[in-house]
Image 1 (cartoon, rainbow over the protein chains, first blue to last red):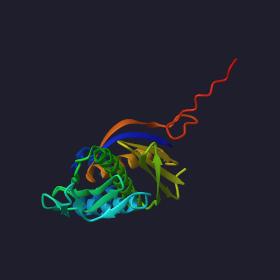
Image 2 (image 1 turned 135 degrees about the vertical axis):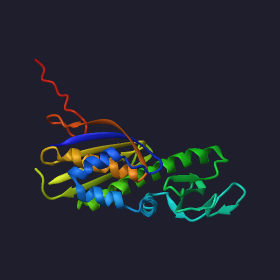
Image 3 (image 1 turned 60 degrees about the vertical axis):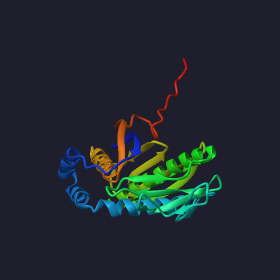
Length: 171
Length: 67
């Protein structure tokens, strides 16, 4: 059988949906046990690092460790949360810092003093979210023993990703 | 061959499951959504149904034969 699913997404704090977990315990007990026992915060950090590396393969995006403001002040953290990485581009030379709250929620920090910086912050933030979801999809498919590849592309100015998993068997 | 294709665009994921026996693609869909949720990806399912005849990637064949 074949199926299509279309989902609206945003990044948020990690959530466990017990109803789905109960269903999964019956249909796929190996996955349900793995998912239930996961140490989720390091996994999210790892996916975020991979997402940053993935974005660094896109023309015009560079990685850094510090965010710089209009006055040239540099920081490697936001409110004590060290940046997992910083995305830079010519349109945002100060960079967009990506960090994680204690509960695993991904957050961003940058100086949006110039109006064009704000536009680029939004573009890079969306690009990171897309890359992070693609990396989460890769992690899922690898556990499920799919052969996985991720292909980035620029679509109407946005950076989007196609994750493809293939596994022998089925119909 | 079982195949999952996830197209991740701004605020949306389009997932295409192909080649799954019986209703196992629904189990795979459940597992993927559960995993995304625990990774901090909030999901709101807009559409989830079996592909119709000749449907590819959510785009239906709308060709009509003219009389």
